[in-house]
Length: 250
Image 1 (cartoon, rainbow, N blue to C red):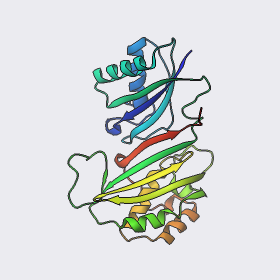
Image 2: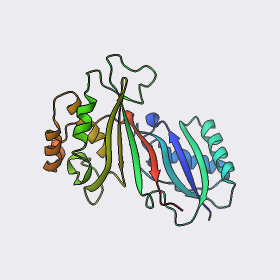
Image 3: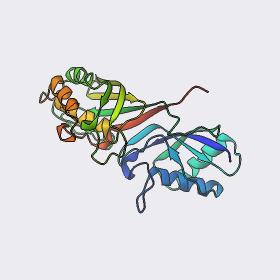
Image 4: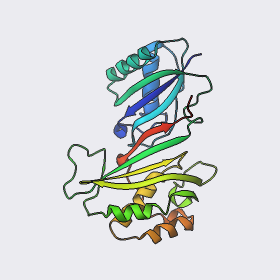
């Protein structure tokens, strides 16, 4: 069966997350239904990351096995047509045939997330479900300094969900950068893989630094505690985006 890579964009506002769930509206199920409407194949789509309810993506990747060969452009355009008819907030940016050994989740070598904070007194009108609105002034430079305490290989127990199913809390965080452009603060995180709620937990903690309640030393102490109770807070899902997934060069 030919295998296809799908590059996907979606607004996660109306979805219960990426993963198919009984009785819930998920991104995975929406695409699987579009595939069935296109070619009659009942498939199980595998994504690179299981984004939570309300989380968005501009660079999600998935793979799917179809019963017959189709031109890649036909797959992309047909799926977008059926997603549009179903009024889904999902777009297939590209489709491409890949070798049978390609696995969107397990062959990925890196994942990149962006978290957006709107830091101004006025609430968002156009991006209400796409940013975290924080009206209190934040010191982005202090957040950037504190973020460096988390870069590297650590036990991230403090910064993962109590429901995380990963076998080990140890991860290598390659990048955690905080920048400001006008009223928008962006936090960019890169690693081979992340724990459940890790990015949102780190952002929630850095926000406390930005408002002056915590210092970089407090962040380091929270990390060293290896205790979920030491986390300063969980940022809401609407500011988070999966923006890119890396794979070995072919």
